[in-house]
Image (cartoon, rainbow, N blue to C red; front, side, top):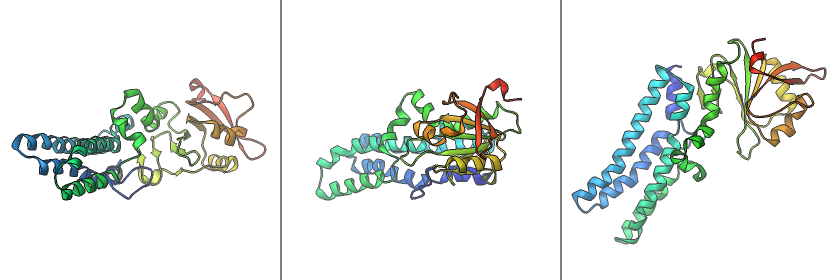
Length: 281
């Protein structure tokens, strides 16, 4: 994997390309409520209780940091990495819970203290991931797996086709910006997510599109890239409306299916369903 890629994943901001705050800066900001609780504590018991908030977050963060670094440099596993890549949501949940815990202090003490607390809370919430995802860290296992499945899918997919088969991987998200198409080689497995996030391959070994493509654009990319398979991880009605003409009439288009790539008379590709048993042919 290499140190450069490991450092990229660990220290750059969210994979959407928002580099306003790095993981480190968000971690530092998230400690402020805990330090404020220590500052407001009136006795040794309260100080110890407040210290638990700071210590728990710090220990969890460094375990994540060094554990992830070890996975990247020693025994990388896309599925294991996917399960551990919830730091953003962990921090978001922590900040929301800490902000709620600090609310009573808004109604006690001098006005100067209230103003300081409000400033701390606001600063800590600036880098938080969208609140509709904040409690994903605390949700059930099925919810977490659903969100992180696209990252682990690269590892699973790589085990199915021949090692020299080039596969285009399609995944969609409800982003309000159309659909995302991720491309990677089946071996070695590599998922690219914008220009700042990749798993399982050197930076020079991946490319991607994160915008809506026309059928002609996608066909050209598949043909020129020599892709033999398309794997549809997650699609929706928008994808079907846009790319439906590339599939033979009556094809069962759905999530988690493979399609063999061939070229039609009009220069567009034809995506024909293929079973796992037929991937080796």
